[in-house]
Structures are given as structure tokens and as C-alpha cells.
Image 1 (spheres, rainbow, N blue to C red):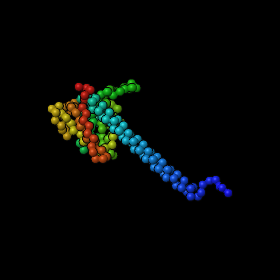
Image 2: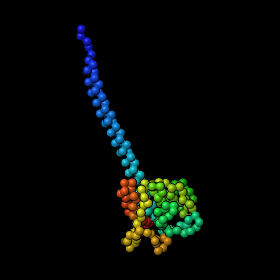
Image 3: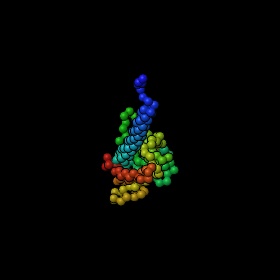
Image 4: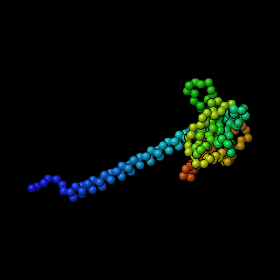
Length: 197
């Protein structure tokens, strides 16, 4: 009597082949998913860095030589880089070009500050030029340590500290050294007040 079908040995061999193919397909799928996640993370990091560069360069290019008063009424230079500030402020400046889409009663100039806090470089704007506290800060970039600044003066020299002779004086350019998580700093050189000179 002749029987149709597979023997037990044939069935085991077929299952083993199927298991090898399924294992290979699963590994390929896992590799594809891991590659997609890594690609998405890297794309998000690049997009965040581009957003930061756009905001940083716009703020510096639109810097104006306009000193401002803080909330207690103390006059501050148009651009200042306090050293050892307890609030982590590394740069504070007055900039133009503040869009006013809603027609609010305010000038087109804005006071902004950058501060380092908790491994992040934050940016905060002031609602008014004089006598105001800054609004809530927004994180713009990751920074493993306090970013370093250098300032190019009108005579072409670079200085580690900004100590202007006049309160409305601006540097020609600012170099920002942003420490990255891998230890290699990102170096950005931006012109100051390029849109207002």
C-alpha cells in the first residue's frame, strides 16, 4: 500500500530549513529597524543643530548697539558676556528684527540671552528692552560643558573677554566653541551686527 505525504525525517529537514530562513529574515528585519532608528536619531540631531545655528546667527547678525536696563534699572552694555555668572548666562545682547505678527505694542528691538544650564544651551528673550525679566528659556543645543566665547575686535584681534570701551560697542565677530558629547567641540564663527552696519 502506497502512502502520500512526508516522512518524519523529511518533515524535520523542512522545518529546519524554514527555521534558518525565518531566523535570517528576522535578523535582516532587526538590522533594518535598528538602521532606521539610528538614521532618524541622526537626522533629528542634524535638524536641531541647524535650528540652533539659524537662531544663533540671526541673533548675532541683527545685533544693534543699544544698551538696556535690567529689572532693577541697572544699565547694561548692548552686548555683554558675563564671566562666572551664577545664572549661567554666557551672552546677552540687543537685537533688531523682532517680528510683530500680532501688532502688540512693543518695539522691533529685543533683548536676548544665552545661558548654559544642565548640559543644554538655552535662549531666552525679554518681553521689553528695559526693566523686564526674561521669558522662559528654550533649549537650543546640547553642550557637555560651558561653551566658550571669543570676540574679534575692530582692530582684528581675538579676545577671550568682551570688555568694550563704550556701552554701545559691538565686536566684529564672535566665535562660539560648543563642547559636544563626544569631546570634539563645534566651532562657530558669526559676524555681529552684519545686518545693521
